[in-house]
Length: 308
Ligand code: GH3
Ligand code: MG
Ligand code: MG
Ligand code: MG
Ligand code: MG
Image (cartoon, rainbow, N blue to C red; front, side, top):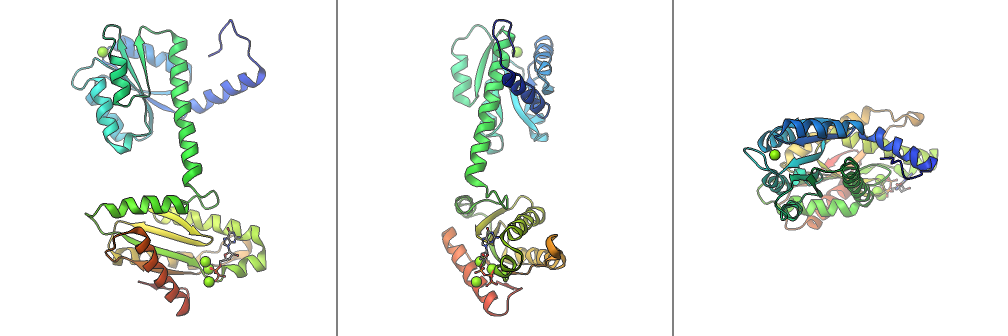
């Protein structure tokens, strides 16, 4: 997006190059029934290094989005067979899976109410055909950057920077949501590292920190798709929609691998005490409170064990 009539600083050029580099990792779906228009948009996007996929109607677009979770942006024409662009946007926004998808509506000139319809349905922006190349690029980049910024802010608000697990606030928020779905069991395991203070005292705080970082990665690898939080300093929670016994078996296997693991710094080994709660409770606080009691019992009865 460098135009003839403007002068840009060196820093600006660097920013543009960085943007182009990042675009290579951004997959954009173009949903458009006119093959000419589709090709035209593909060329514009490829000029800016985006990774482009195509769909020739709304239904095909929906199928592509369902099967490919890497798609970050959708450019959707209004007039398309099977499912039009507006209905497509409404369907997508109804599904929480597609909340972060960047959507730009597109339509030939004619109906002036279309842009409002698209945006009300949840599109991030709208373009009327024919459009200037530069306007297209500006709107695409602007919407993408707004979304990226939102994701950055959301991560800062929700993720513990050391362990990369959910922070305490987010843990409670998402835990409450899990509980509110009465259809399935919810079990919680609370972990506390045994004698972790000794690690700090022996090796120093920095080694302690990097161990916590490694422990965070172990949790993420062992419990994919499960709510994982850093409850406190070296206390972690696993919250899963499973019965207590199933969670206990998983935690048992996890502790087994952790016991054998030599954490890099000085080949340190860590043991954990765990309290599990799978009682039917009304609030997430209650689930935490009972798990904490069980954890306390695990500590008092000798550590390196689970109390459920
Ligand atoms: P135990 O749980 O077995 O009773 O003994 P502990 O020594 O682990 O005691 P406790 O759980 O009460 O204390 C936790 C220690 O973890 C205290 C603190 O030094 C350390 N800790 C907590 N958060 C951090 C952190 O972010 N970084 C580092 N390096 N240490 C931390
Ligand atoms: Mg069309
Ligand atoms: Mg503790
Ligand atoms: Mg401890
Ligand atoms: Mg203690």
